[in-house]
Image (cartoon, rainbow, N blue to C red):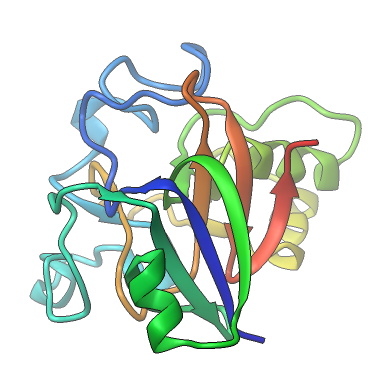
Length: 206
């Protein structure tokens, strides 16, 4: 089913001055780790969205859609089908392109989901620990923090990407056209309202 997610504002990437989450989980500038751990840009999604050192993933500003530094879009929207991003723009533009699609409306700011770089939140079970990550608006974790078979299995069952230790992680998350549909919506305080992981709505704040 094709679904359109729309919010008060769409951002193709999170700027350095946009912080989400608590200080414990996020860096002062952005939030998913320190500057020394990140390169210029970063696309959250499947393994193909992570930099492997080749030029193929060197720049997210491609013909696949607007780049990470594109201006925010008021009443912006992202169309999702079969777990992939298939269109972005204003809600009117996306609805014109995909008439009849289901529309999910969210208050706040819609953008790419995050990489959770720190230790996973505490919870009674591995499944619940992974769900706590999703509730923060993140759909990827670092391998060194998913350090048990049970955690890695729970991540796999929930389509959460486990980033290998030797991966060069880029600094900012970006919404990549035709990429895996990993999205998050944040309110004015930085709290996560909704998380979409591989096209599935996996968290919605009640």
